[in-house]
Length: 275
Image (cartoon, rainbow, N blue to C red; front, side, top):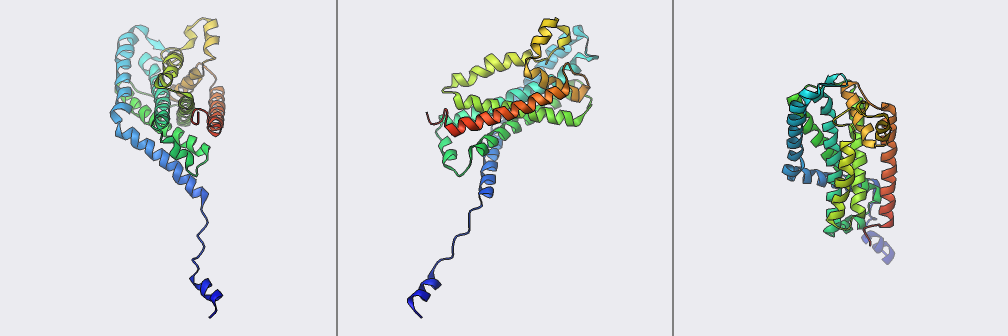
């Protein structure tokens, strides 16, 4: 047996090709499961506060003030505001989860582990966004249970309910991600929720119908995207809306597509991460 034959016999078999699709799938679910574990681990901070806040809203606005308000949109006032309160909890928690988690990764300097992994940036963005959606939907479910203790909710169209809550949660998870990318300190993390998100939410038709407003205020309110999201969700329960539901879904889909594209672009450029 010559040396060439011996070398062939002792030569190690070639390594199997790397399945990038499987690697990306594992990376995506690793991010999602880590976010889920974080939500459950600190449930006292992620789930309980929204339930307590919703209870206070129902007691104060629903029971005390609602008796004086009477009906709104043909429904009992407490029943009318219930979908708005559920959606408000979805919006704030979806946003808060992603902005705090990704900024924490930047602040703790372990975001570099994601950047050197064989994962495209769109997978990283998608993982954090789905994590934010998990928290938003989980908290929305908790607030829905609280709502049922105070009033009853009709289900006019279940697919509109599901579509509205998923798209809204996605939009604000993406908004939280973009905020975290650009934020340089904790003050900048809290600036958008306090001075932009909260006013838009309270003026987004959570507690009232815009038909009560003057005509100029109604037109101004239509520029608020949260108004369309809340009313689409309310239509799924009660069958009433201050806006066109189809237009509301178009706004949500376009907003999600634009924000996702923008988030991936800034990640590709290294904005806020490589500075």
